[in-house]
Length: 167
Image (cartoon, rainbow, N blue to C red; front, side, top):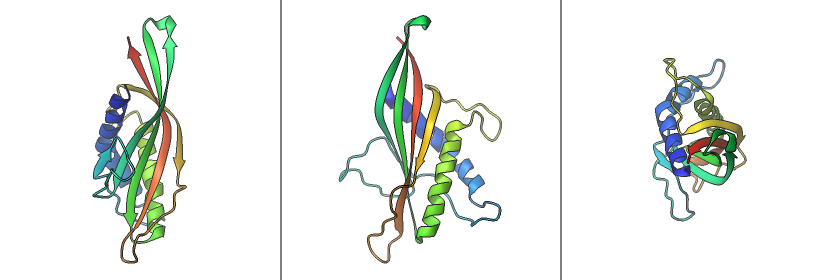
């Protein structure tokens, strides 16, 4: 079910995202940034009702779910979920915010694709059997409400999460 997939994605990011961000915080020959994992995670978003109180934040949204019946394997179904993960963040300069967005995107992609953690232990992604077709979008603009407030921006990862279900 989609709820189990969303919950697993939250737990994966909570367990592994900070280590990936730490690796990207000070790239060789690049600009060092302080990168912290999201403080808030949401699995739904309603314009005007979802209030982000602390940044960075993460929203994991479901899209369409396709089913692929596995007749040869008995009573099994592969649910193929379209997922959108948005990381919302803020910084005092648009240049640093763009760097943060880029590094968050790559750190999140690494969490989704890696099979083992930094200690070599296998990362349990159950009920997710595979993650595929990851697309990263930086298309939104950085916005600022008032001159003395930080710039706000987001980076989106769009992908398919496969889940095998035995009926």
